[in-house]
Image (cartoon, rainbow, N blue to C red; front, side):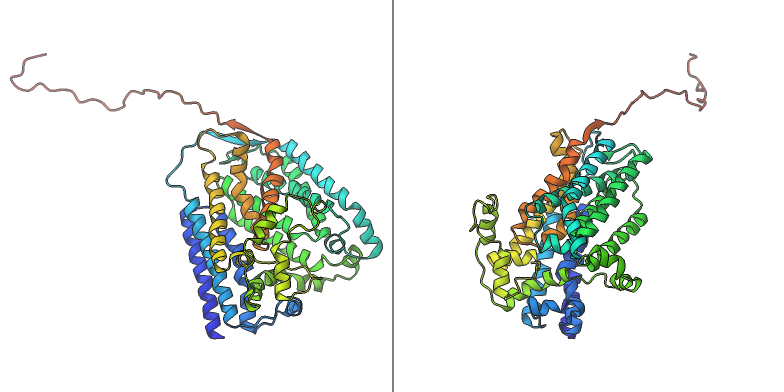
Length: 476
């Protein structure tokens, strides 16, 4: 076991070194945040498995329904491949995202129209509530949680996609708006008057959406909005208050833990059966989730089952996804189902697949290398575009997209790391189109007023020394 622990510590140290290298090259807070996400869904679960030999505690059902893990050579190879994927991703982000020197600033800033933005986010939140109002009544009548009704019973049908888009259109712009308000009137990218009513409006939308997502059991939307808002605040504020931001993020993390533990209970069960002890036990389980272990075990399951790559299957499925399944019933399936059949996992339980595993199932070990470089290059390009967005004249919509792209890309990275290549379509829609459309409609581009007065010539206060005529010199 000692050798396995040393291997795991070496993998974590290599990833930490790559994170520091990428940070020094880009100076973007998106780098450590994205590296933390990558570590959590790649190596975090390995500590429990290595120390206990495969005992996952409350998540032992994964051994029966997904993969029975043994710390063997396949598991050690899994750790190495995850580390290689993460290191290549970070290095590629550094190579592409680095901006040499200080770039010129054209003096323009994006001004968010706070009243319009609050109204738009509130309307999206109301639309989300109207969609779940029927299932919410069904949950109260049947005693089945709203999470189970919408996730496994499929009561929403095609409206489930609309609900996800509306949730993100309400949450992410509101989080960015609150971050812009906290940044003050001299933001580096976005400016907004600091009127107290604006903070109340954004906060009201976020609190309402927090309650709605609690009923739905949706953690991804809350994590996405919180990460995006925090990263934008750090990038936009001239003097960010890191301690206050850390406390806020810790509060959001605790809320996510409660979401994970109570989302399978109905509203009546939460009111009656959940006690203070249950809440404390849920908070004590922070850091250990089934999604973390499921994604971590995916590559091991593939290696252990000796699955052969299905070359390019994900790209075929991604291209075919533009056609609705109602029009093409036998449309190519996602690589996830190839993975479930290959490892013999239960089809009645939903699992997650690591992004590196998706690339492996398409092109083998070469796919892991290619996937890490590709994701890192796109990530680094969003960082570079954000740093260069204030230099030169650009199309307004492109200016808005490039200003927020790095924050939304990093904020939605947990979703990307837990899906295959087919997730790129939803990633683009959720990270950029749905999240930033509201911001485009509720913002304008303004230039800072700079008045440069000519310098005032003041007489010198020094007394000039009198010139003494030299002996023999002619008089002036």
